[in-house]
Length: 371
Image 1: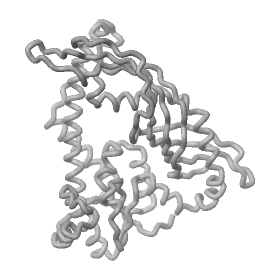
Image 2 (image 1 turned 135 degrees about the vertical axis):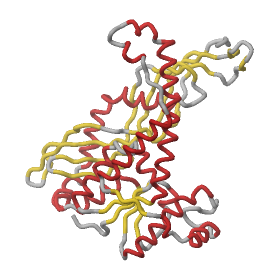
Image 3 (image 1 turned 90 degrees about the vertical axis):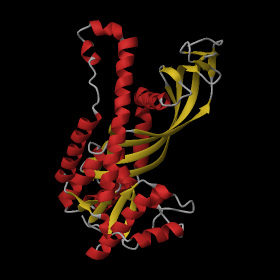
Image 4 (image 1 turned 30 degrees about the vertical axis):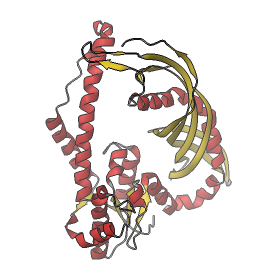
């Protein structure tokens, strides 16, 4: 495999989007880099940002564990009497300090195992960074966003590392401000999927069969459309979990949803092997999802009685448009430059990028009550 550069720098959001160490695409990228002799590096600021975000996520996890324990022992306490379910009622407490040390050690071991080198930011030029800020250039932009200083020092460190080592590099990030940065020394790549696509473009096998597959990508779309109803509940859960964090929906419950429409926005090949192709598919899915919840928009809280008054109970069956990232594997066979079999293997690690309510259907709205 021949690439323009044999150096890759990873940004913080790459780790966070892949749950720091366990993401399938991250491990695929790192394992392939080791196999191809490509050096992967991070700046020490990126390392510190990862540790900070691990700690922030740990604090959120502690809250989630406490809520889950309280809910199980309140709403689900009946099942505690059964052998099958009672094991789930002893949810351990999250210990921030000790659990952080364990996660940090795990992260450090992962970096060592995957041959990821940490580069010191001492080589960065402070004057150059502040000039970018006062000139309103990327990554700061016209808004002169002061929280972009870490990114600016990361980019400047990479600039000087490339100069010192007389080398170019790929920088993988999904941060819009970093993506807008232009350098003569390195190329900023939009996410792991795009970097894996660069790998695929450079492989010899890719050159032999890509032309055949790319002219038949409609087969992937058709195959996915035929199978998409099988994932209705999976997508419903993704939306439900996102809505749980919305203060508008209290005591939210959902029913069986229905996919009304599915459209592919973009598709890139991230891995190409004999008889197996992996793709990152960006799709819009219109999902009708029955929901019931308490609406507190007109309610007021009585601290003395510890309850809300004027609560409205709502049942709706509205339509939401989901913006989904669907990593997918397809199996294929080629006979005399013609695709004769093309089938969906699996969807994995799919993510809800965003959503919007495109049609509201309120089925029932109760009179005011207390809660």
